[in-house]
Length: 269
Image (cartoon, rainbow, N blue to C red):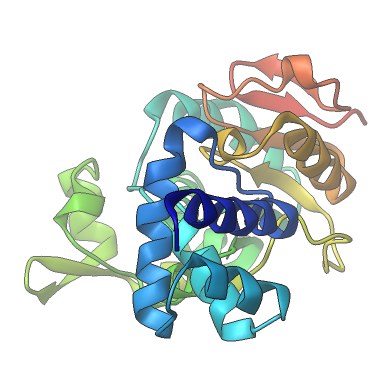
């Protein structure tokens, strides 16, 4: 396979990924994308990118999942972006507590750090018993392996460095190898599922009072960003909240979300 045909096949793989999941690797990250697809070749025993592209087009489910998992970026940690979490604690949570049952969605949840962080913050504010009785947090991600990690709720030091010592002692148990597992009461609050944000309509019976969609939008092109934000709007309660990363601006995308503060938006009542 020549270098040109190799690149052409890899572009076909990239186009498939963008069309099916919305994840997009620009030209400046083309080499990184190739490195990640190399993992898929090794894992699935494929000869080259051309075979990978053919298997994706032929809807080989195992290969499709392997490619999506490899392309997903899953760097995360507990208590990431304190500025946003402070707003959740001080502004959103008091408003959410007006509801008898509180439904929160952590979209693109990766290994569950964000969902469990929200559970910890709510437990500290409401009390653990009240949080168990009133709070339901759903975490979803396009990658099956990270969803399994979220369900296991076992984390190493790289995930827990920003967890205050008092909260680490209160909500985690050491399990050896410098790892900790989240306490069972908090694990009960959170449910995790594999889900593609580009697959609409979303399969929810009830709307959410708050949707967290952080550190994911910049992996999509603008058209896909707008598409996903509109889809999130459809499953938010009137008056519901959207939380993005402080580095992800939604204001100039022309969505129906109304800006409240940096990284905080709201669906009109």
